[in-house]
Image (tube, rainbow, N blue to C red; front, side, top):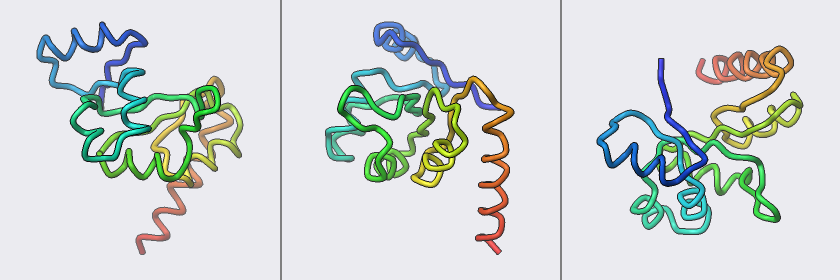
Length: 125
């Protein structure tokens, strides 16, 4: 089991990290901005978290594009989108490289994950 500490407060996340927490932490809003707009090598210097728990967009800024998701994967950062309640949207996000989704209706979204797991098992053979 993996635990990821997250907070909407950058101060809280900074404090958690400064106290020496060695587990996984979610990116702060500022880290998401750096990750989105800086080149990977420079972003890694400013991004301490392990997981981007994000919406698909913030105003006009898209966070669900393949380039952004590839950058996250390159840097070892999980990308979990919220709130996804449409199976087709979940499928599109996973196909683009998202590692997960947060939903209000797991019963509707779970079959998409089963489908993706089966697809991946067939690709590996």
